[in-house]
Amino acid sequence: MVITLFRLIFEIFTVGYFTKSLWDSYLNVPDISKYTLWGLLIFEHTYYVVFFMGVVYCLYLMYHKRDLFPSTLLYLLIFVFVSTLLNAILIRIFAPSLVVDASFINALFFPIIWGLYIYNSQRVKDTFVVPYYPLSENDESVVTTADLEEVIKQQ
View 1: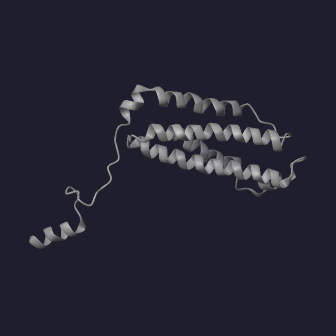
View 2: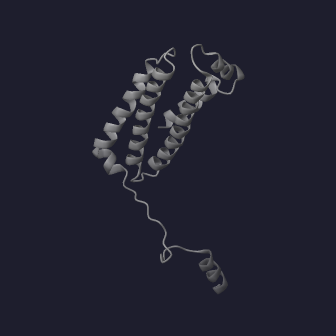
View 3: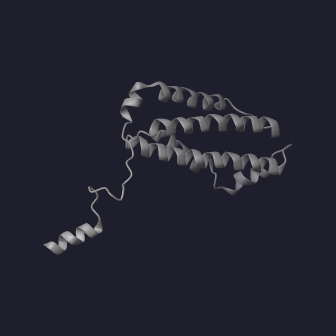
C-alpha cells in the first residue's frame, strides 16, 4: 500500500501532468472529439483522486490495525477493478483510435488477487481486530477540561 501511494505520487510528477505541452497534446488527438477526450480525462482523474484518498485511508486503518481495514480495502479493490474495466470499455467505445495497452490486464489482476487474499485470509481476520469505540457523554474514563480545572482548583 505504501509503495502504491509513492508510485502514484511519483507518476504525477514524472509524467509531467503539470506541463502545458502535455495538456496541449490532448487537444490534438485525431479522430476523437475534444469533448469526448475531456470526458475520459475527467473520469480518469476523478478515479485517481478517489483511489489516492482510498489508499491513504486504508493505510491509516492498516497501521492502527482497525477491524474496518479488510472490508475497506476490499471495497477499494472492487472500485479499482470496476473503474479500470469501465475506463477500458469507454476508451474502446468513444475513442477506438486510442490503444489500451497490456498494463490494463495487470491492473485487472491486481485487485482480483489481493481481494481474494483479503477475503479468505485467516491471518488478516486475526490481525485487524481493533474496533472503534465512540466516546459517550456518560463515559467516566474520559477526562474533560472541566475535570482538569476542578483538580487544579483543589490543589
